[in-house]
Image 1: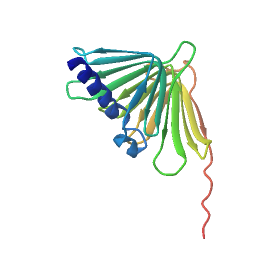
Image 2: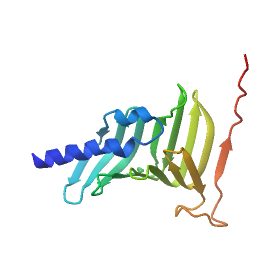
Image 3: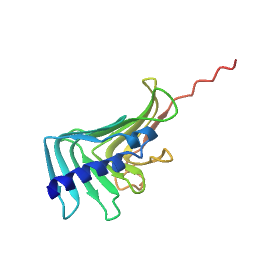
Length: 183
């Protein structure tokens, strides 16, 4: 019974781990995780989901081959999602500010720090903002750090998070904004 309660508490803690993205209403939604297998280490406060992992919470959708969630003594969650072989882990979430605005990303590894509300994408990383089904902005590099509170991100050409000459290039596509019509 204690083990079941601990597992339920970790799953409830996932709410905090995924709620700091763009759509503020997602914070109050239940978190659902589906996977082929789950292991929970109560002593280390580590929960591991393996096999076609799908996390949904409100408008958030995250997919990976494996997801590891740890909890610190203060109750903050730290989540790491790993891509399947030759694939990518991904996330998608509705943004505040309009009826059809989204942000999505993918990488070989995605880390989310609940305490600082920062998402990090490592290796073959891409992020896109979409409006009405069309990409408005897109960035790609080996490392992307995304502050979900400020909706601010940085892109680097190495997966260590620092840029080095000759290590490749980052790419960005910024679409022109449509002019607003005056009445």
